Length: 250
Ligand code: PEP
Image (cartoon, rainbow, N blue to C red):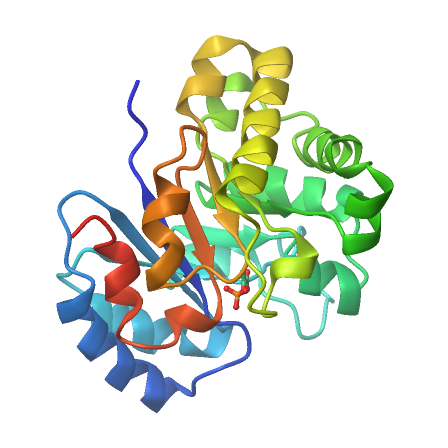
């Protein structure tokens, strides 16, 4: 079954609400596409401006994080119900920067994935190895552990909705892209794991993205790989030319 390519942006801690409005107004034009799904994950405070600016376009708006509790005394956190009410459909969970700077673990990622699904949000669950792990030859062991724990307790029906983003940490924001073969090898490994855990139907339906210095110049080669269903894009999603990634085939 053909999986639709997804071009997903991760703005990280960039753009104010006014800048968001102006940038998305441009992106509505450059990112128009009938064949590729387009998602922009933006800082929480930018969500209302982003949802408003993207209205009527093919751009979907996502969040970059959420908490795994329903509500209560969790100062500074954002709940899934708040995201849904604000018009969000997707949420990045477990980005390597959240793991590195905000002490997220595979266990908290799992709680967030389950909670997002409970609220009808699509989790974009991130995994990825360090350069040291790659050099030690444990990349696939590490990724399998991250994905297995992250999906613990997720039903097959829900697993089909989850988007898994493979992002080698050494390729994020460094300009060093994994070769398309390196990226394909791990994305295929993730699909093989999905097959082991859930069977063929889930393995063939669930989208697996590559992330790490994706740009207009390398998107076509990466997205042409059998097991890469699009990209999670940081730096290059902060410009209207993100549309060249969306329209990679042209
Ligand atoms: C990311 O933020 O997830 C990412 C892959 O960043 P960049 O594209 O800038 O490497």
